[in-house]
Image 1 (cartoon, rainbow, N blue to C red):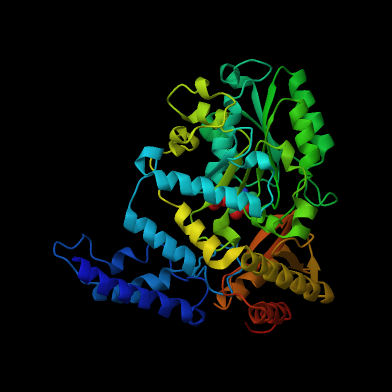
Image 2 (cartoon, rainbow, N blue to C red):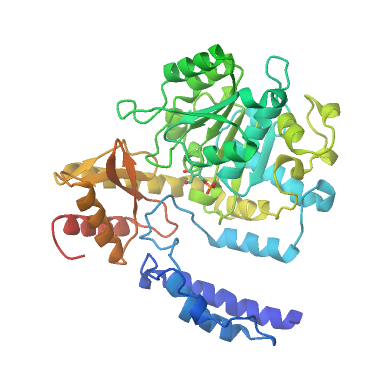
Length: 474
Ligand code: PLP
């Protein structure tokens, strides 16, 4: 493909992307294909001779699109959003074109340094404590991981590398205990499995406490474990749980964990970006000075196309101790010099894409005020929806609506009825929601946060839900 060919193909691809995005509402939100649908539609082997873009795009329309669940559809309300914007697309395109692998500073200095700068920008935007900035005095800073699961894993590995009571916790492996809540994302369990941590306490929460962890429960668990000769070393606390957007009392939990010598990680994968809104910050993001690491996904609600999960640590020394294959002692407690900032030592893989570009493009092309307005818009729509749900006697609100999430259930419906009703709503193709389980009840989750979602889309889905639950056709 010559440079000039690419110019023409690139224009064509952009046209195809804009056609798709501007007509996205014509698609059913959820794909309805059966598993294995694709293999029989495509040749058994790759072509021996080159094929043109037109032929490929035609197959995209015919074979790929039916198997797409349209995450960027304005009526997609499932899981949490993974919104994708034109500025992020432009940044990602440039990243692909540069094709650098910035595992070490020398691999492409700008890839490393732009990541440090943009994560400092993002930390200031979210009003994180200074200790999380690369310019702070504790050796802290940010790094882009692929996902919040990777962030939790590397935070756990850093925690394990930090001496407990002056002892190397690695040597006490079988005695180490990690803690989180029964509302935590399964990534905590997976991190423990990968790291070979044998004891993970999924501490109970309750509806009365809004599915948040009671510091007294943590205190009792850590004390009991110590009494049995075990060593608490890692706590994952949640701001915005996957199930219901519950928020743990982070400051109090961190105080307990610190007293027992444990590392405190905050998983705010979805909700963290809402910290840029002053009222949300005041409500939910207090006490972060006392935590060791904090992660949030700009690839969920902040318009940075997947994958872009931000992780900050107050001191990167333990991360580098855990993940570098070179001795780190000479940097102990020091802010790293630029030539030593090799992000391969802050993550599991060696290679890494230039992901900071898409974050930088988003921050620059929207500006912080428009990003705040964008997130506020989602918050307001979710709040207005919650009022509609609350006013309708056919439904119960099941958890306090927070951020963009509303959890509700048809009043009086059995598990089977609720499941069948939700499936009828989704099968209409006009929206897509998933359920969760809270206190044993089947609960519908409606997460507002799509890049193109406007109030009319929320009103439409609510009218659809009312109709189906009222016995009408979808
Ligand atoms: N943690 C929380 C609180 C989440 O809500 C999610 C996903 O929704 C995750 C972790 C996993 O995110 P990722 O796909 O980035 O690993």
